[in-house]
Image 1: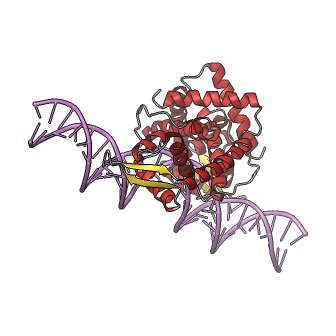
Image 2: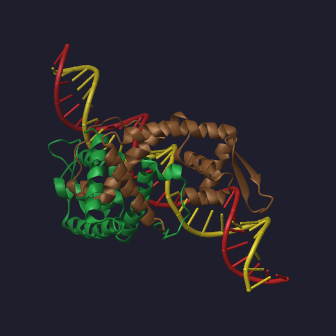
Image 3: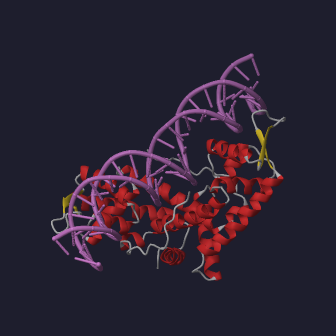
Length: 155
Length: 155
DNA sequence: CTCCAACGTTGGTTCGGCCAACATATCAGG
DNA sequence: CCTGATATGTTGGCCGAACCAACGTTGGAG
């Protein structure tokens, strides 16, 4: 299930909070996460699933550690999510002959198809999320956030 | 304890993610949350504690439900956090004579002092967080996020 | 050959955000 | 006046994202 939380016209938050960037960031992110979760829920997926599928699509077959590093997901969490993806045959996991420590994770055809559905769904979510912003503002926001993200994730 | 996660120069994330606003938002928010949590941890506090103290300082004595509404914190969570704050004498909880369903929560002197410390700490965090942005950009970011937040929280 | 590093895996933890249920108290309508 | 809807505080849960420690296996560099 997924949170409902419709337009509950809440009273204004304290000014001290409303003017604190970190608060603005985490709150808007929370709203974004709600939208994403709600949309992915209909596809029986979560954020981690999409991230891994997207990475696999872009990188091609990769090890679990590599996937985790790319997506900012802990190795241990990658295991669990990959189990779920494999159970749905969206992904295949095979031992790497070249390095027997590794598993080579491969995107299946069904996986690629499912990724597409998720991507389409999420595209619509982005529009809902950014609804009040002009195209220019959307670009600005992306630029600013990218700058922050690059800065805070080791260059 | 608090997550460490220093500048682990991670490999670039998939482009599909890096260009998705909701992803940028949640990721930067995660970094922000780490910084905030780390800073507040030194004061033996969490985000919820700061939010409630800040709201109390701005609203004056208020009921728990009101506080929750203002801060976007669930009633049930307010109870727990208020217990912790009361245990440290940062806050006092008394039954409202005018409406016996309610508790009137009051900020103590120690509470006001502690709020100050937190606010100072968090001010420094904002600077760390926004380090790579010019003053102009910081303003822009604040503006954009505020717009989004207002839009998505019932006007 | 020996260590150390990397990998996958298991089994935890924390924090923010939720929901359901209940008892008590208030309040508005019949 | 009574009765039913509504608000409040409280308890006790749940979930997702993000972490961490530890273990056995495997690889590689010295």
